Image (tube, rainbow, N blue to C red; front, side, top):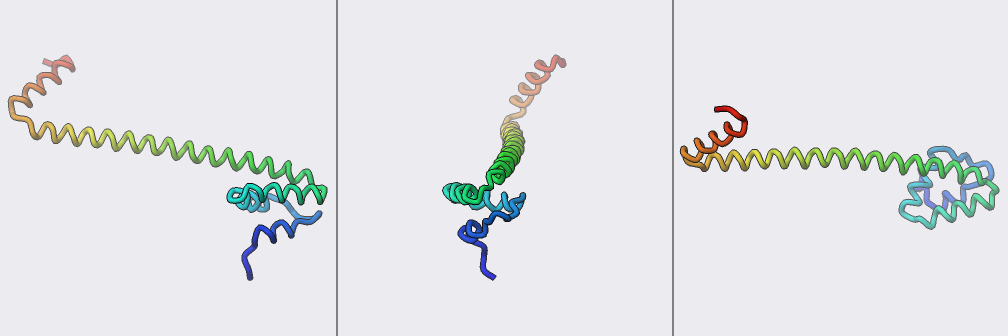
Amino acid sequence: MSEPSKENFVQSLTADTWCGWDWCRKLYGYSVTDPAFLERVFARLDELNRPRVKTIYGIYYRTQIAHERAQEREAGEWLTRQIDKNYERQVKEWQKQSLQSMSDNELLAKLKEVRARRGVS
């Protein structure tokens, strides 16, 4: 069995073709890599007098774009949290290394400074 192609997709359109969600997903997938393809399908739908299919596809398209944006937003928020977490970890590691390289007198001075900021004597 051969793979379905864009040409087969266009040629298979008839006045009775069921244009449901799966059909819209396939059209969306083809049109992502070939925007002119969408215009060809719409022209074919006009020939077949099926304007409501364009409306259905428009609803699908808006839904798909909203879904993709929500996923991108979630991924962006997750990435921001990861970057913040990694930054905090790196700062703590640097501070730990910095403290380890200090002399006893420097550490005592640092401790006094921290206690003074906290209001502890």
